[in-house]
Picture 1 (cartoon, rainbow, N blue to C red):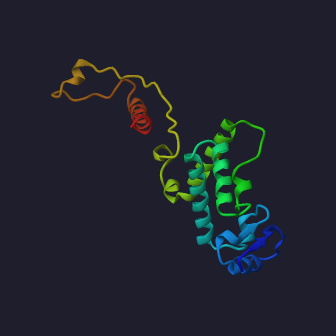
Picture 2 (cartoon, rainbow, N blue to C red):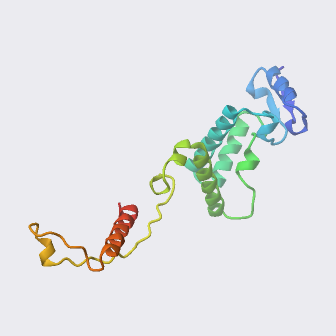
Picture 3 (cartoon, one colour):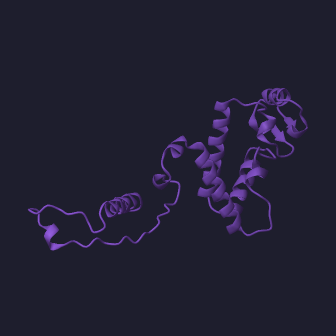
Length: 186
C-alpha cells in the first residue's frame, strides 16, 4: 500500500498497529491522525525494552535541550512532522507541555525532566556516594573546628607527647574532629 492512515488511540491491541505499519511501502505514505502514547505500540515491554525506551527518552530530551528553547524545539518538531508527511509523533504531547507560561519556566521543567531521566538511566550514579556523583551538586557543610594549642615542649621530637588537657575524652573529640574534617573537606 502506498498510503496508510492510522488512528492508534482507537486500537485495542498491539497487533493492529503492527499490521497497519507493516503494510506501508514508505514512510512518506504513513499518516497518523493524532498523538499516541508509546504503550499503544508496546503493551507489556520486557526489562530490556523499558531500558531502551528510557535511553531513547533521555536522548530525545537532550536533543531538545541542545537545540534551544522549547518554542524552537516545537518548531523543529513541526518541521520534522512536515518533512516525514506525518501528523504526530508518539510522545510530542508528553514532552512539550502546552501551557501559558513563558519559555524559561518550560525550559526549567525540561531540564528537571532531563536530569531525572539521566539519573534513572545511569546505574553508575546509584553506586557512587552522593558527594562524588557528577550529576548532583555537592552539599558541603562548613564546620569551624577549634585549633589545638601546641606547647613548645610537645612540639620537639625528642620529648614524649603528653595527652591533651582533659585526658582521653579530648583525644576522642580530636579524632571526631579529624573524621569530620576528612568527610567534608577532603
